[in-house]
Length: 294
Image (cartoon, rainbow, N blue to C red; front, top):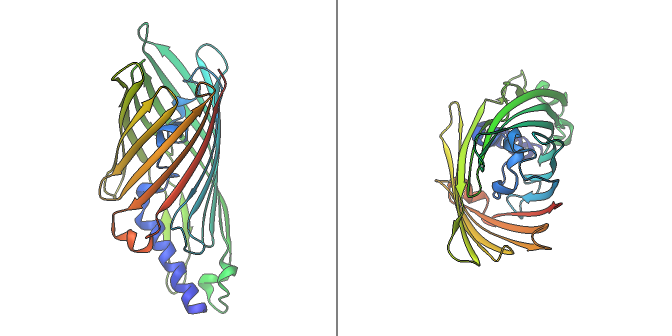
């Protein structure tokens, strides 16, 4: 049993190292979690927004990755927006809690187009409970890890009535997430992630709007990851869409709006198309609840 736990631990670390492109919290419904990756989004809606979400990966696998997210943002003055994000990532014996505050400033460049610049500040509490492995007399596994890694980020968000463009680097500082010295040392670290994307609303009729969007992320030493998303919004109430992450996954999602979309409930189901799918045959589930005050 101890040998199996050791193997699982090594595989977990390998997963962390090999998925640097996803070291920021990953969400299938990224358009509803924009301020997580871009601090400039804070306050762009024009009133207070609050979001709760839960994401479960590798459903059916014990101690598989889970992400819990709470974020809130609001304008506080005509040109200033603020936000707060609290995200908990858990997988096996690793737990990370990301806590960040956002600040944005709006510059009007035309009657209907604004550009927002933002900064993000905070950090990550990292806990690795090596005692859960039950491995004794091995220097590599005798000391738990409890550290806080501070970080800062920047972003820009261009907002127009029918489209948006987002550019951000939510974590500019490189931090070690895990580092041990021993017979078989392992290490994982955060590299700078750059996000670039945009979306456009195409009004097909009075009742139906087509909403295509794209989001790319690049991390040094890792392949570029690209999300292609398209959804249809019916009567500002019901949305159905799909997301394709190149060479990684396919997602189907839906949202339902109540009270003129002041309350939005969403669900996404993701199927992995890469080799990792051999360990994720049951897919991943994501649920969101977003509240907007008019």
